[in-house]
Image (cartoon, one colour):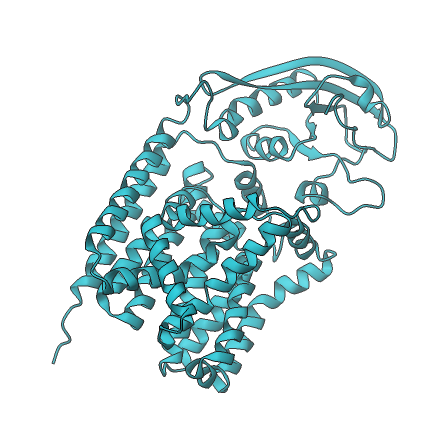
Amino acid sequence: MTKPVDLSWVALVAVVLGVTGIRLFGLSLAQVDLGVDEAQYWLWAQDPAWGYYSKPPMVAWLIGAAQSVCGPSEACIRSPATLAWAGTSLFVGAAARSLFGPRVGVVAGLAALLAPGAIFSARIISTDAPLLLFWSAALLALIRLRAGGGLGWAVLLGTAVGLGLLSKYAMLYFIGGLVLAVIVDPATRQALLSRRGLVVMGIGLIVLMPNLLWNLGHGLATVRHTADNASGGGLTPGIVDPLAFAGAQVFIAGPVVFVAFLWAVWRGIRGQVGPDERLLLLFSVPVFLALTVVATLTRAHANWAASGLIAAFILGAAVLVRAGRTGWLVAGFALALAFQALTLWGDVNADRWVVAGETPYAPVLGWDTFSDAIADRADANGTVTLVAERRSEIAALAYYGRDRAVTAKAWPPASGQPPQNHFQMTRALTGQEVGPVLAISPCAGAARFAASYARVIDLGPMSTPVGPIEERRVHLFLLSDARLPLVAPGPCPGR
C-alpha cells in the first residue's frame, strides 16, 4: 500500500524554497558592498587550504564553490549563506517532526527560516550559516540515532560534527551537549556507548584531522585567535553587557518563539518535561549560560550563542503548538515577514537610505569607488604595491581591486610578535617590493613612516563618497628606500 504524502512537509518545503528564492533575488538587487570579513573570506577562497588565520576553512570552500558556478559578484559570494539557512530550516523541521509530530515540525521549520537572526544572516556570508546547517543536521541525526536509527545516522552525526568544526569551533558546544546527554539521557547513552558511537567519533576525527594538522603547522593560528577573541582583551566584569547579550537573543530568535522557549526552560527547571524536551535543553541552555558568563566577565557578541537557537526553535514551537497559541504564532511570523521585507528594501536602497542624518549602511558602502580611486593614484605614481593600516581597507582593496594591477598588503607585526590578522600572516610588507609603495593612512603626518622608509612623499588627503551624504577620508604617502626591518607606523596623533 502506498504511503500517503505528508502535505504538511510538502508545504514547509514549498515555503522554504519560496523564501529562499526571494532572498536570492534580493541579493542580486542589493546595493551593499562586501564587508571586511566577507572580502577577507573571498580572498581565502582564492587560495584553498585546510585552515586560515581566524577561522576554519568551510566558509572559504563554500565561496569558492559558489564562485565556480556564478562568478565573483557580491550576490554569488553571499548565496551559500542563503542556501545554508534553507537547509537549516528543513533539518530543524525534520528534527521537530521526529520528536513531536508534523505540526510542530512545520512551525519549528518556519521559526528557523523566519527568525530575525536568520533573515539577517542569510544575506551575508559568514561562518554562522554553515555552522548552524551542520549543527541542525547533527541534532537530527542524534534524535534518529537515539530512537534506534541505524549506522547511516551515526555516519551523518559524525560527518555533521566534523563539518561543523570545519565551519566554526563553536561546534564544540555540540560535543559538550553530547557528553551531557550521555550522562543524563539513557536513550542517548545506549546509542552512543556502542559501535555506532565509535563510528561517530571516528568519522568526526577523520573529517577534522586535516584542519588540526594545518593548525599545528601554522603555530595554532586559528586556535590562538579564537582564544584571544573570546578573552576580549581582559576581564571587565559588569551587568550591562550580559543584559544586552540576553536581550539580543530575544531579537535574534524572535520574541514569540524565545519567550515560549523560556517557558520550556522554566518547566525543565521544575522537572515537568519529558526526556525529549530534556535532550533539547541540553543543547541550548548550556550554550546560553556559558556565553552569558563570558559576556559578564569580558564580552560576547550576540551571534556567539546562535547554535543554542536550533534546539530553542524546536522547544518554542512545541510549547506554542501544544498550547494552541495560533494567534501568537501568526503575530510572530507576521512580524518576521515585515522584518524580511524591510531588510530586502533596505539592501536594495542601501546607497540612498539616510536616517537621522546618518547612513546606516556606511560600513558596507563605497568600497568599490574607494578601491578604484586608490588604484588610479597607484597608476599615476608608478606603483603596484599598496599598504594600509586598517584591515577593512586591505580587504576591500583585495576584492575590489582584483582586476587592477595592484596588490594590497599589511604592515608586518611587531618584532617577535605573532601576526595579528590574516593579512599580516600572508600579505605582510617586506621592504623588498619593486618600486615605491603607496601607503594609505587614517591621518596626516609623514614622520610616522620615517623609521621604515628614507624617502616619504606626502600625496595629501583623498575622499570618496559613502552613500548620499558621507565620505571616506584617508591620507596618501609614497614610500621608497626601505629601512629594514620595517616598523609599522605608530598611532595617529590624538588617537
